Image 1 (cartoon, rainbow, N blue to C red):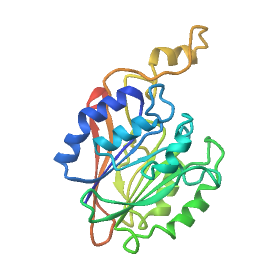
Image 2: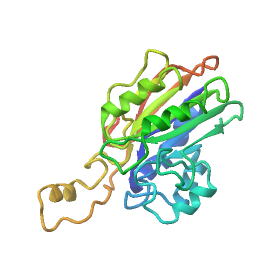
Image 3: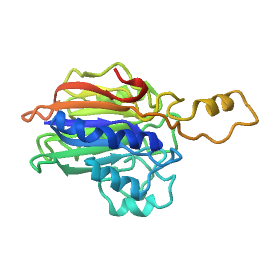
Image 4: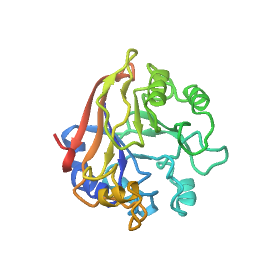
Length: 268
């Protein structure tokens, strides 16, 4: 089975790119399950709304993961309690609304896929120890026992923490991807024990920008220009960035992983 995982959707540009390209990617690659990080999907690049989430589901996304901006829209706290396909990081404070992981069915209803959303501890909002939470969840989402495949979205700032989580889940999950920094890394590979991995799968948005934000205003902010305003997303043509993992039905591990970079300034 093939699993599509796309990086952080950045504002309207990212949403337009998704609407334009997703159905073609799914059909041409025979995608059986699709995941996207939606924490920057709102017009201002901060948070996600019910309307946007439901639009993603209607386009063919099966699960939306998130990160440190998950609570930036007030409506999310109530919506996430009802919508199990929208995840928040599992290591947020105990009692936080919603879920950090769950088990879902593939598009053809044949396979069970576990999706786990984690957030790094370094340079991020205060959270529970991500490695302790990862260890606990790894005993609940088990390949070939209660799921056929599993995917981890690790939303984090630093590469070493992401790599460490990748090695922790190696052989225990189908795939581990990093999100949050919005720039795709060139280390797409299958780890020693069979888990597909990429330190950061990039973003879905306008790359003629500063990690998705308007470049002129971002430069003004770095230069301490008095005319600088709060960050706002770039509005040019967006690129979809992520990976496709071909998973082995017998082991639940990865057979092949390939990068997806479609449209916009980053296409190749």
